[in-house]
Length: 436
Image 1 (cartoon, rainbow, N blue to C red):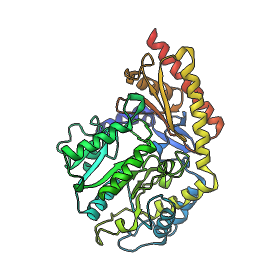
Image 2: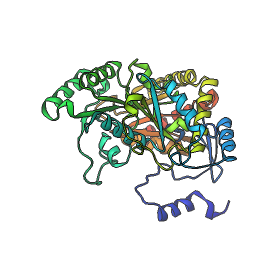
Image 3: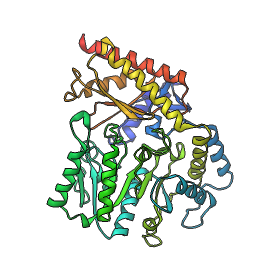
Image 4: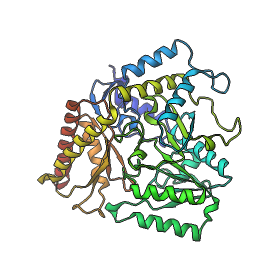
């Protein structure tokens, strides 16, 4: 490696060539990755507890994903599904239709990104109902497109400075018991919304994440989801569940909504659907999915043949390797280790809450054990310190004080333990340095 190939040199080139709006957490550059490990261009090894933000549930370059894409590449890489279709699209749609827990007969359309899936789900709901209003939740994240920003329940950095956003979008408080917000308060706020702001007969859809992703890994209570389902039924509203971050075995079930027993009308998905290749989907009740006229849905790259091959391989891997059960095992290991840290004398009052479903686990960092004293400074310092020691972790939360764990579900117990050892060491050093 020469100086021109160093992380510092590439970071300087990045700053000159790429806008600052594309935020980068770690100014080191990947050279190679396999399963739950990444090596940067200077040869340093990292344990990956981020998985490309929940994209790599099956790990980096799973051999079966790699083989499936290579085989498809021998035939063709693109025709555009609207010009000349191909069997891989139909096969993956059939498999999702048989798997996604929505009501009744199902159909699936493929797109490219999570935000695109969200936008199309709302389009479909609006077309089906003939209405325009959409209800989302505080703390939600649904993408960076204009409608995605409007639905997202966090201003900085997602909405700030981007001007007027699409209208007819309303937000309800997301109930978080740790912060004293109960389900009953959310349902009361919905009743108030219907009385004060918009007739429920003007609402096309309600959209919710079963576990908030960027919002802080808060789990939607079964009571809340059942309440939303009933309200949607009462008023003819389409219930959309955003499984972009929670889907594909991450929470111990194929989809997080399955923990509640509630069946939505539409489900959006992306991220781990295709093991690192850009692919998203909307799957839902056939009657609703069929509402838009021919040409109303689609996109040039939606359902790319290479991504579809990867998606079909991902479903095989999840089943063959038992990744739903593995997610529960990983979640137990993570939670137990975090509780040890929480109760250790050197970290008393630092970890305020530990939560999640399956391997979608988070810890909330606070001062003095007080939920009302978020500690975003410690969170930022911990991410940097962990990276120095070779562990990649991510933050989230409206108050920027939550560390989320999204390691590949194919990670070994040995690597998982090594990563948690690094985390504990980094936390103790950060706390000690601040106290000094």
